[in-house]
Image 1: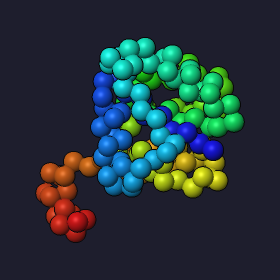
Image 2 (image 1 turned 180 degrees about the vertical axis):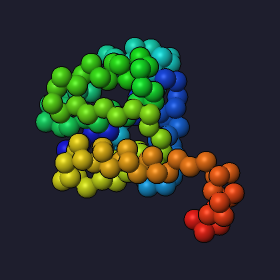
Image 3 (image 1 turned 60 degrees about the vertical axis):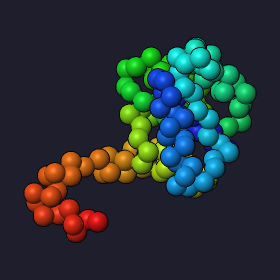
Length: 137
């Protein structure tokens, strides 16, 4: 089984989860870490706890920013083979990951989510200038 962890500075993680569940419904295998808030002042200990309590599960950490402390904490757990870390997440990446097939290789699911989320980032003003905006919607 896979567990998904959205780990961000502040309450971004909970916001992504809220939007995600409006679109795809409740997610039992999704955990949010709202780092450096009253509920989670030390996110690294929460991250370690999740990994330790899931010895049979692969854990996919989705963090907000490359080089940020949340991401660095997740990266420090990658020595364990079952831990995967992807950063710079957005809603498209999270949807892609949580909707991936359970039997799909986790690393491949992460790669696909990263690629699909890149394609979803578009400067719409340029599309409109090129006449593509109406065609894409």
